[in-house]
Image (tube, rainbow, N blue to C red; front, top):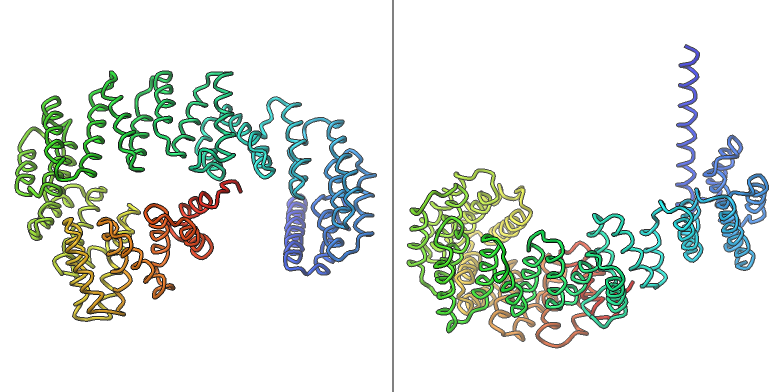
Length: 595
């Protein structure tokens, strides 16, 4: 029983001390140094060997400019534990606080000497003490010595961060590469850190240093890691053909498939470098790749051609689809290609009936899985919406929902039910479906549902007849039908007849995106500027900042104006979905990708 009471008493003592120490720390943070001093003094009197109490008491004295008292505590501690390098750093910092850098340097050097004499077990804690006071040179020395003296020690991350802050790019990149050799799984984290320095500009200092380092390392040691990093670097610089050379080298050495090359082609397409993407994908078609991989290559090539084809090129696209079907057949393996072909017929060639017949014929051929059947029915429904046969489309979407409950495709079908109801003016039913989808497991669907829901609800409260909303829905349908000029005219109707209403800013934004598609950049610019001028406090202003900045950069040749807009997102809209991209592009335009 006495033993139990002893342990209870001990626990209470520890708990009280911990609470008191936290209270003292809070006082320090609040600038109430006299109160902090009082608490730390009591704690120190009870346990004068506890480092936290010593340093807390010293800091309180320093903040109150009671330097003699702080110095006495530290010098006494140095006498008691002369091999404690951490205390020597604290004493050096004490002189730094008083503006005595020469005296401070003496103790920093003593700390390093003491470390060298006392062994390698305290490298991390000593380096951290130096880092605490931004003594990066000294911290780097200790980390370097720690790794040299103990081959098992790994301070590459710590060193890389210090070298980065010092502007020593070569050493920083080298440390991160050393880390990846030991722990390849850190590649995503390392690339994210590289992103703070690497830009699209291949001639920038960071890009040049990194490229030269990788090339030199490859010459010294043909490690596939360096090929992977070079490929990543060239992708950042949008030099996809150079990245392709590295990816081919990786493929030949790893012999683990062509996924890296496929991924590179997708990135090239997303950056509109169709020429490089086609060259990359044609390489896959020439290799002894699997049938599935070659079909994937064909699918990406054709999708890219469809997205970028003009009317005079449609015949050639059809011929290419026919050639692929001739080689691989219209089987289960080519279902994705067949669905894409039907989309092309309906949305590009305006052959809606032919496309639906083609898809319905697919449903009768062979044994299809529920997912494959649902995918075909989704496309039939999309084409029926395109043809404004809304009720028939709703039947197909509902069939997909029932066949694949809780699947992503089922949630997408529910969203399209809502969107179709919205197009036909049944806003109440659309809102019912959207309310369910706001909690969708797919963030993309949930966000789209929330956006459409807000458009409906915001513009139903203000106008019970929903007049402007009905016009807006018709304009959205025209945009879905690729009738951009008609949609622009319909949005104009809202801007003329419902000026100043809540729907106006959304109309400016939707219309601006269509104007860009139609290459009417000046008018698109005016729309974005109107959102910024009249709706500066509303939810769409960061969209306007970002897309206008993109317009200035990519089409209007006014990078300085773009830089100002990216800056507004960085400093005024930190929660924006465009924040990361805006910061990256701002740094690139400013020409200082390095922090």
